[in-house]
Amino acid sequence: MSPLSYSVPQRILHWGMALLILFNLLFTDGMEHWYRLVRRGQPVTPDDVASANIHAYVGIAILVLAALRLGLRFVQGVPAASEVEPAPLRLLAHITHGLLYVLLFAMPLAGIGAYYFGNTTAGFVHADVLKILLWLLLGAHVAGALVHQFIWKTDVLARMTRGV
Image 1 (cartoon, helix red, strand yellow):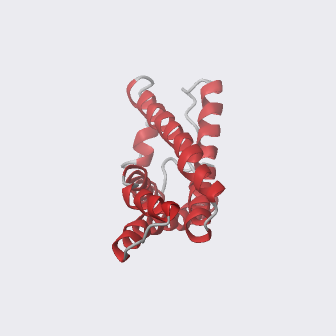
Image 2 (cartoon, one colour):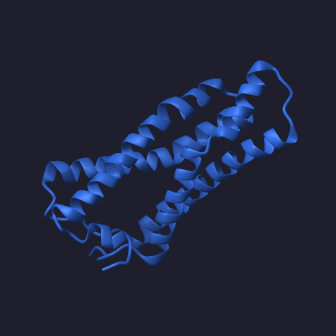
């Protein structure tokens, strides 16, 4: 038997992680500046490192929270997919959610590889490949929630906001 809504801890993790992810997607200047300095062999100041560390620490927090979130998902379960949603779109939503979870682990791990271990391939994958994929999946995720809310008039969005 599936729960009707996500639990309060699941909802807090979802929205807290959403804020952290958006923060790291939108505010990359500190990390990018640090990387340009390192790549050019220019001196890096403590302020440069501190700015880059903010991005890194937020990414590590996302990784830890993703593990916690996945654990809660297995222990508490998740609501069943809406029957209103056509089967092919339900499958697409399932794949999108799965890929989002993969990215919640892959992006921070690639970032760690780039920042702490100097792996330029990991940096390219993190900043160029996975970042674009994450933006696309987030767009699909938000679009799906809005379609549920305004076209199909389901309670899918409410299950992750106020609960039903």
